[in-house]
Image 1 (tube, rainbow, N blue to C red):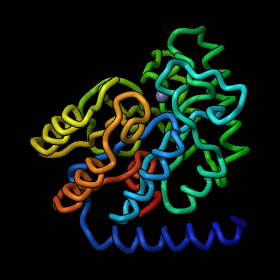
Image 2: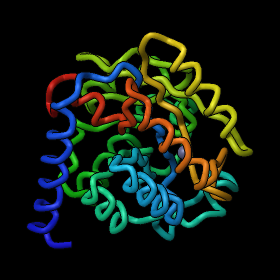
Image 3: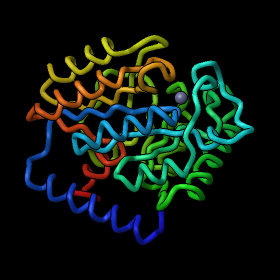
Image 4: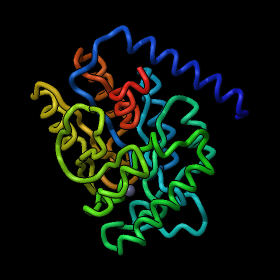
Length: 260
Ligand SMILES: [Zn+2]
């Protein structure tokens, strides 16, 4: 896609989103399905399904996951083709959020601090090089295995806008200064009933933000959900007055007034 065309589409999406958002008051129940690992077929389907409801998906990809030299950590990532930055730029131009999910999916909590820092910076360099308009100051870094350390958590807010790690069922609503997003998930088998329980938990509270860590659709990835389930869930959520289905970065940027 040519650069001018990209900006035209992005501008149209942004204008539509702002028009839709400013006319309604702030929602009290936010839902982010945070899709990890960047499986090509799943992400194409996820984007299509979200677009049917006028929504933006939250997709977190491994910086080198598409390269021939990538050594997949385990069978769930190895078994499924990952997308590349051609696809990530296309999905971003269609209004979806593409965020970093590490350089090579190493467990950053199980290595020396300096090595983990180096891998995060390398990941962000790849994103800056490959993803149109990428700005670390507006990025959410999604830890592989939701495994972080206190040292990494103290350092990262100077590098990215926020990070996602484990584990909690529901976060507070996004607010200025919020840098740590807690998530939960379930696997390796289908996670739908676990996700359903967390949606109910969120809705039983006066307010909150569920950041649920999903992966692939149908038979792809660890803890998948079915395409038909995703469609029914979104169909249900968009009809609930208090709910906003929103990608993580956008939720935070809205909270600080960087976007309406
Ligand atoms: Zn992952």
